[in-house]
Amino acid sequence: MELWSLLWGGGGCSLLGPPSSAGRSVPAFKQLAQPRSWPAGAEQRRSQDFLGNQETAIMAGKPTLHYFDGRGRMEAIRWLLAAAGVEFEEKYIATPEDLDKLRNDGRLMFGQVPMVEIDGMELVQTRAILNYIASKHNLYGKDLKERALIDMYIEGMADLNEMIIIFPIHPPGEKEAKLALIKEKTTNRYFPAFEKVLKSHGQDYLVGNRLSRADIHLVELIYNAEELLPGVTASFPLLKALKTRISNLPNVKKFLQPGSQRKPPMNPKSLEQAKKIFRLP
Amino acid sequence: MCEKAEHRMQKSLSQPLSVDFQEPLSMAEKPKLHYFNGRGRMESIRWLLAAAGAEFEEKLFETREEFEKLIQGGTLMYERVPMVEIDGMNLVETRAILRYIAAKYDLYGRNLKEQAWIDMYVEGLRDLSDMIMFFPLSLPEEKEMNLEYILTRATTRFFPVYEKALRDQGQDFLVGNRLSWADIQLLEVILMAEECKPSVLAGFPVLQEFKARISHIPTINKFLQLGSQRKPPLDEESIETVKNIFKFERGMFLKNMSTIVAEY
Image (cartoon, rainbow over the protein chains, first blue to last red):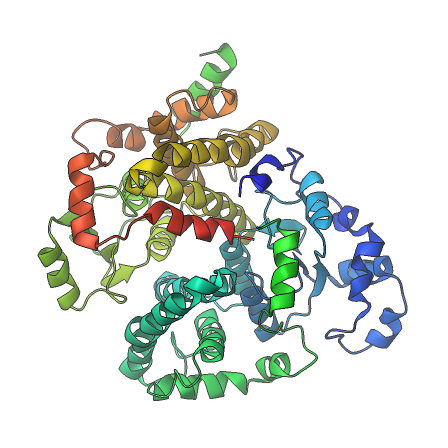
């Protein structure tokens, strides 16, 4: 646990500096050769080396996501970008050395990922990243009060999502108890709260009668909860309807198809890899 | 204090704060804070309101029964506190409340990018302040180890970031050359860390200057005086009260550490 506190590079945070410095370790990123969700025209780009892809991304102004190849804390960001119709690149951290390099180059303000290169900034802290993207793409309400409601809802969702994200990391002996706790919170606290919001105004979206990040985060949460607890949405008809409605939005529908940049749930193998990268016991 | 720092402090004090305190629409209604009589997660909210010059009331419960009465009242969306009645809303979730107050009182930057920088700075501090907040609830046999961990993180992970940010920019504030939520949060956390270890800022001269400078801002200075609504750290007695109200589990500190571990 202490290890990464000692590894903090002490280098500067590059504010507007060229983001290309971390991309030089090409061998580590050869793993990207597996096609993920290459947008149209990808065939041409696939034949270029990684650096070529990166330069295209910079020129196109696409955000670049730095994380390991898995959901973790980056997945909510992928969902939001996808739902907003924003194309993005990903640079996967495959080894502890990849993470060290990002730190030593001073690109991670607190030595942590997620990190997203966007609009000349290297943003860290999941909420900072999500807030920026949501604001930029008009998914954060039309005024302070709508934003307050959205924040109240999404922070509740984040509490539950946190439990779900961490769940795979618990040792086997604790898993059953943790799952029971997640089930209890989902069915007794969180899902009823959001069902109540939808019922109170009878509208198609949680806030302001239009799509916001609240709807996207909630639908992501519903999918995550259902993976752990099949049928958990059964007694929440409005949540089910929201899930269907949002899933049918063109950008979201595309993201839910195989071949998109959506990541699969953690399996024993990806858990092992993540532990290695982050030097967890 | 060295000459340069004193000059900078005088300079920033003599200029009016470039913060435009919005008048609340309903002047008669002060925000009302619902919590127990202690710091916990409500303290950052008290700091922000106080720094903004916003008067507020508090309804503080002392027992489990009073807390349950509040829950029964139906104003807690997730049956949890903090809750703040403000501008006709019953806001819960600490971050939702803080963001609303920050935006309302123009402490959240002037544009999206400044907002992003403020968010990064405050979210970074949240990890550290949570650790310090939960520390009194450590099991006795773990206290020393946890304290050591907090201080190591503070001095190797967090404080260097803010020391560097202030030094590199050469300005009096963290973002946009004006007071923001980030500066207020940083001061709060510095003071909390000093309560853990008075000399914790020893290697951070710029943070020492920052602390002095921000503490002297009139609204903040007032909040730091005796008799303000600032709450003291938990002592033995109030720890027992808190445990009874919220039914904490054993090893609370380590439980929340799992969040820090999984931050990656």
